Image 1 (tube, rainbow, N blue to C red):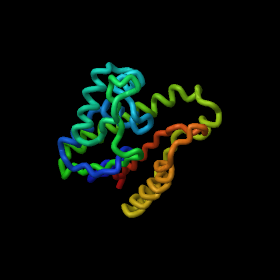
Image 2 (image 1 turned 180 degrees about the vertical axis):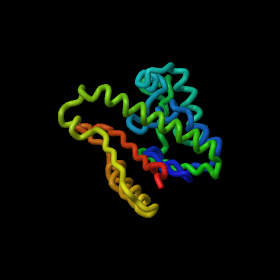
Image 3 (image 1 turned 45 degrees about the horizontal axis):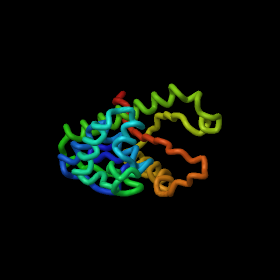
Image 4 (image 1 turned 90 degrees about the horizontal axis):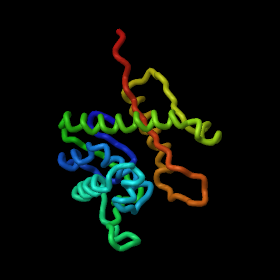
Length: 193
């Protein structure tokens, strides 16, 4: 995240409407977007079972996401009684411009940081349940590097470039591929001079 925008692996659209940005500041809506990005289409009932929340909550939040163009109706489900939802783009990337509204930007950043922190903690709690190949492939990396602003921007661009080919490919159900969450944050240390 930067002070000007917030970027995640969710959509291929630029969001500038403050109301649409505010719609994303609810953690369940981000959970639903992430779920639909990996398991679309899905009904509100299916989303509720996976997320462990009431179906009515999922229905409400899916309608709010649809109101701002983040998800769309995918037609009736198998039983023809319940609506299915899907994300608008199958491999989305979202770029958010708060238009200088620092409070709105901060609200969305706080939600994203809290969600990512919770996901990291949840993984570390269940890490031993993973197979050895997955345990060796996953985990955290931390470092402190001395960089100029230009070098920091270059490093961020390279990191995003490394991820790009993996974000754009179709899933092969016969492979052992799983959705893996990545979170990049570059934060300067406090001045020591």
